[in-house]
Image (cartoon, rainbow, N blue to C red):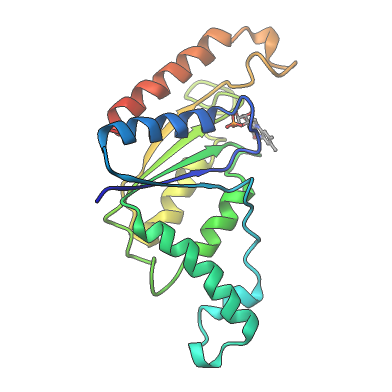
Length: 206
Ligand SMILES: Cc1cc2nc3c(=O)[nH]c(=O)nc-3n(C[C@H](O)[C@H](O)[C@H](O)COP(=O)(O)O)c2cc1C
């Protein structure tokens, strides 16, 4: 049966474009997969603690030799991995923070890397990153190439067996919000970027 894992990582609950996009993807996916299962995880409301030494070493210690803390860390980590492994499609809402992905998403990724269960094993899943950025980073812009999410995500997910993730990026979300951007009068471009993103989802979620 079809199973969607839907993750969000924007700190905003109001006005978040990445949450709008991921929710729209889930809505379209549900319409295309009646009877499918959707698992939702909000990486901000339900924050995942950073991987620590106990959790990291628990991956490499045989079960019988684990400390109680390592056992607890494995229970927590395996539940996140179960959620990921059960899905056949994963949609991830991802804002641009300081030219990269948000730390809450990184905390999730660190926890689901497992030599036994995820490394090289996720190639049968479809990953869709729906992303928002305050500025614009396309060719010809002063900061072309400064949005490091897509190249980094391609490298981070390749060892997991994910060779062809999809990326939908909506830009200029601060066009009407940031005092520095308002004078640039990019509101119409921002609207166009959002509309393009929604249209791309119509195709991908089917
Ligand atoms: C902590 C933080 C860092 C940000 N860094 C950047 C940045 O480096 N480049 C940029 O274009 N926008 C940056 N922004 C703006 C967000 O990318 C923008 O608001 C985007 O729409 C966030 O996604 P959301 O709409 O889903 O919340 C930053 C916002 C926050 C809160």
